[in-house]
Length: 133
Image 1 (cartoon, rainbow, N blue to C red):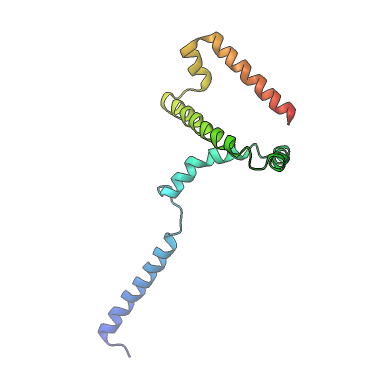
Image 2: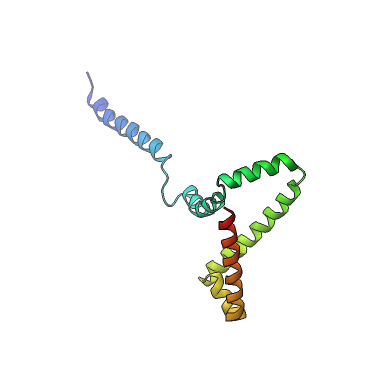
């Protein structure tokens, strides 16, 4: 049988065990304030955009180029990846600071004619890409 002191300790022991279970479960939950959630929130759109070009035609082209040139063009990948990171970071900062898109920023700095020329170049490049795809 339990003495009066043992009866008082038994609920405390159960409470501790339950709180440990709650803590163990809560460690693996992803809350909005966690740093991992914030990292995924920042990287998510970039990862989606990076994988958007991985269609069947692109994979076949990448495979054929890799089979033909092997490691001889690896230096170009390093340089282009570095340049891509710089341009993406610059554009992200400009958009974050000003709250405007590329066309608005070009129009403010260079005028309507240069904006129209840049958007025409963008339209031609995108049309060419979609025709090839």
